[in-house]
Image (cartoon, rainbow, N blue to C red; front, top):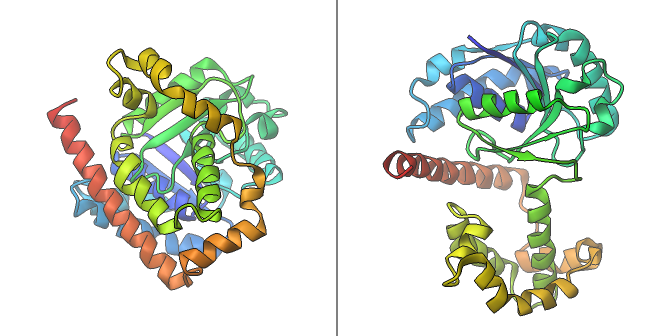
Length: 312
C-alpha cells in the first residue's frame, strides 16, 4: 500500500490527508504545532464522514484509520512514496523544510509543495535530490476541488513530473502541467485577472460587490463548472475559437489596454468595497460560511462525479 507524508496539519494539510486516505493510501501527518497536530485526526475523520453523506467516501471509518500522526518530519517521511508539504508561505521556511525532507525521505520519493505562488527553484536549488522536487498547487479545499497544478524547477526531471501526475490522477485529483515557472502558476493568475477587474468595478460603484458575486456564481461560474474559457468561446461563434476572436474581441482588446492597476487593492478602494459588503464577519461567521461552502462544493463534486459516469 502506498504511503504519503503530509507536512502541515492546517486546512490544506488536513484536506490532502482526506484525499489520500479515501483513495486507500496510508497517511502520516506532521506539524510542529502540538495542538494543531492533536486536533488533526478528529477533524480529518469529521471531513471524511461529511463526504460520505454525499457518496464521495465509501467507508469513512476505514479511511480515517489509515491516517496517523508523526512526531517529526523524519518519522513522517520514512519509506513514503510522496511528501506533500503545506508549511508557511515563505521561501525561507520552505528551504528549511525541503532540506530536511531531502535528507529524510527515500531517494525515489517525490517531494511536492502546496505553495500557491512560490516557484520551486527558489527553495530547491541546493538540494542533492532537487530533480524529484516540484510544486503541486491545489485549490482550497483540495478534497472537494480536485485541480492540482504541477510545476517543476528547471532541474526537475520529466520523470518526476510524470510520476506525480500519475499519482494525483490515481487519487482522483485533476493534475495539470505548468511547463515553465511563473509566479502564481496558472489558476491564481487567472483568478488575479478576475479579482482586479472585480475590485475596480465594485470600487468605482459600477456594481455592488454582492451583485458582482452573483454575476460569477449565477453566470460565468455555471459554465465554468464544466467548461473552461476556451471551450466556452468555441461554442459562442459558428466557426469556433478563431471566429470568436474575429467577431468579438475588439471590446476585449480595449479592456486589456485599460486593465485595472495595482491600486485597486490599496486601502481606499478596499475600504469602499468592505463598507458596501457590510463589514468583516466574525471568526464564527466565517467558519459557518466556510462550512456552507464545503457542503455546496461536496454536492457539486458528487454531481460532477455522477455525470462523468454517465457521460465521460
